[in-house]
Image: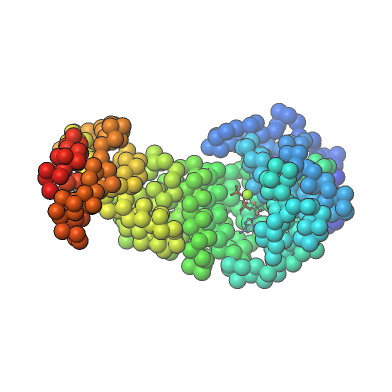
Length: 469
Ligand code: ATP
Ligand code: MG
């Protein structure tokens, strides 16, 4: 693209800034308006994006939702320059659906709060106010800002700067493109559109410096690379590797959010994992997923065959993390996951080598009773597991397991076979009335009765069970 680095008439300030950045701007006569044939065709699958060698151009207009347009217009009428920026611009240029347009404005946060009736100060110290529209949808409005001081985790920001300053503090060129929703002008001082065309993740400015300002950007680079299947520019990648130790300073919550978001959005999860391993982020935050000394980063205890299966798993970040980790619970504890997620990980670690034989229905019932709420996770993992690793040697039996177990489980559930103590036709009081000594004996007898019922659900009658006390 090159020539069409911006559409619309740049103002003087813009031209000066562009000169500051050492970028070239062509006279209006040599800039070509975006012709339909040159525009990015709508695509659903980013994998197929921009492979063709057509030249990307800015579309004449972006489909800005009415509510966003109204907010921008109100700010502009009050005298504050306001632009759309960030992920939605990038995604729309890629032809991907994204109606979540963020706005960036010259209005200080207090002004934004005064101008709109319903706002939420979601990140007021960084200048972000959410404006609620009449459908209660939140639209983020952030004041033009510049980072004054950073420590790799937090930034002290300054307002009252220009759009160009604001774009300059953004992480990657493809995230630093602005569109004026009223005038349909574009600002792309870092040639983000060229990088979209070349399928490149590239830091705005000096990558070393930008990562040192905020180490989370390293993980964001990996996420965007896996999501769009874009390469990371050589210098950006080099800087990511050189600064990877800085990730240790980040809070576990931010790292977890990035990792989970990456799993949810990657084209192929295996690619995301390879990037985390290659850059060294896995060594710091996810050591359980790579075998010590294995540069390819095959997960601990997981066979080679399983690696290729990773991409077949449902996009459930906890399930996938647990699948990859030798010790899922310890990894999820490090990431400060919720107790519920840690328990899911623990159960997966504990049970993934102990599947029942679906030919033996009582065995499946006992397994369901033991694994409880984790059965569905374990079933979801089955297609990805290297079943040759399971204890029983006969391979036909193993593949039988994979294919038959879900159906057998479904049949047991449909029949509502009793699986827990609560499902038994007798309770503790019944046992005491029948002469069992109150105390631990009651629990023991109930367990014994449950074992009988798991063997044969027909036995679950009060009469039969009391006869067995
Ligand atoms: P997503 O689809 O994940 O929401 P996004 O690009 O919209 O992608 P956000 O985290 O929503 O990402 O951030 C919005 C914009 O804010 C980004 O496009 C980028 O311009 C800027 N941004 C976000 N995080 C950072 C960061 N850590 N450093 C610099 N700029 C950032
Ligand atoms: Mg976003």
